[in-house]
Length: 271
Image: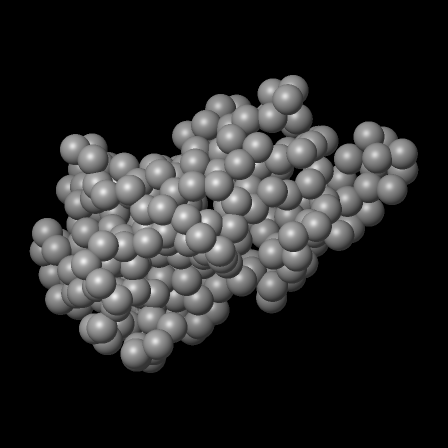
């Protein structure tokens, strides 16, 4: 299995082979700031509505798939960890990266999975940019992160998906590529400490362009994700911010992305 581990806080991954010079197709761009029908179910957490109920059809026809809950967190509220903060609760974002909402996933208590289906046409890479952070819940069976904190470890896997159906991957689908990214330990259970990553997933072995990206939190207990940017390209790491074309109808597409800001290192794939 191949893995990419991108470095510490506000990190930019640098891809070998020179600057991006090929056009890319932007498949998905989501900052999770406009959920449909968000409800604070307690602790600044929306747990009873799936991600697709809050963010499906953004853009029209786009759909998430998930296993187990995958929460949406309210940032800057007043309920989360109120007792631990002397009554002044809420998730804190001193870096100013989260905005008002982020996604949250479990690793050990139950295995949350998130997946999206895309069509990459004949491009060789599905490039995925996103932010990740350790965080924890003070209810809904939490806390989940051990005392002292644990760095969140996510596995991003790309599956061939000949049928074009939505799903979380696995289940007999052929694995095309996979990367592992490791974020940072948060200063406490209610404050985000964001890292940014860009991952190039090799899609060249797909059957007909249809692929599924699976996001799985492997370690950390609980962690957050935000700011997805996904593009198909022949240049690894090109997420379509310069010479790009926006997909008009991303109906049978899926994946997840990661952002970056600052400097960093992308380690070449390791067998």
